[in-house]
Length: 193
Image (cartoon, rainbow, N blue to C red):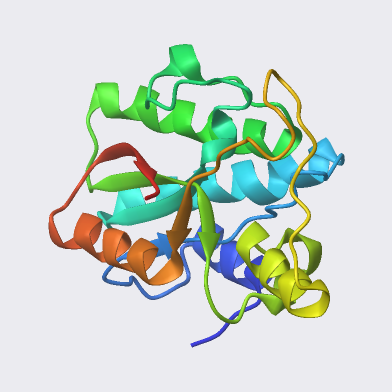
């Protein structure tokens, strides 16, 4: 079935929705430039908390999209709070829910929960994301139009164009999601190449 996200979460909150086999929660505002903290926290944090609590009550496996943005400027990409320093409201909203999961894991969960920290996901059909589409998507069209790709200006000790990013193909991300479901994985994990 299809529900608008607002209608869906109201049905969840009211306990008036059919129990699914699993929940893959991939939705969020992924705009790293979004400054409306109230919107971001309601959309990315509160929505996820409510879905998580419902899944736990109903014993539904829950796989959700966290983000590599939780690391911010850290140079160590290890799933450990010591290395997590989000730089924007988006990263913070993802970081905050990861902390909820960590706390709840200490008390014991009723169903598996996997948080996947996606790095730069790319693949077909991302034109609807506009400027938030992957770097790979934008660079493909830039190369097609201009015959070259403009790289980022140097910063944080990196020379012009010397920065590095991890990219992961969307089909590989889907496989990781199903692996987490099939193996009943619980925890927070990096999901990149």
